[in-house]
Length: 193
Image 1 (cartoon, rainbow, N blue to C red):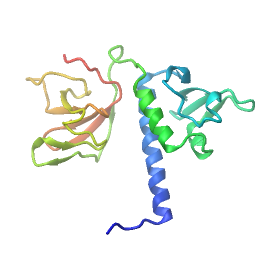
Image 2 (image 1 turned 30 degrees about the horizontal axis):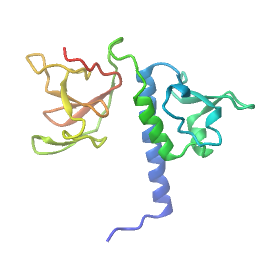
Image 3 (image 1 turned 90 degrees about the horizontal axis):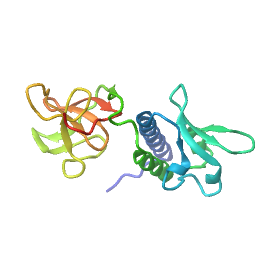
Image 4 (image 1 turned 180 degrees about the horizontal axis):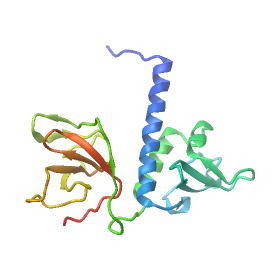
């Protein structure tokens, strides 16, 4: 029988979810490295009542997500404020993330950025790489894992290869020997060297 969760537990899980999506949005904007006009996106994921006033999305100098607006009383707003003011819901946040993933970034133009992480491990069944499951939910049968260097750029396995794999869904770089995530590639080079 499934246990019913209390209101405080559900609120906490929603806040954790929002933080995870905000982090992913921040990574996408770092990959893109510029302001993205809402007109560049296939659609505007903000609520219908205010979407016409949401002009662009960008990061400020503190890597906070800012929405440039055309409201009469303010020209910019934190994404966190938009969430708390119910101007975008959780499905809209996921849509925004998917839309930003489609925006062309600086791939190939500048070096990769590997954000170090600690304490993350992928799930697996023994040494079977076909049974890997990344923290993002990716598996070999979906987007897969590909051999990469310590920056997370794709390479052919060879003498220089350190048994590292990159998750094609989220950019996490995984050490095959202990299944530890060493970092997240924020600007992957998708061409094998």
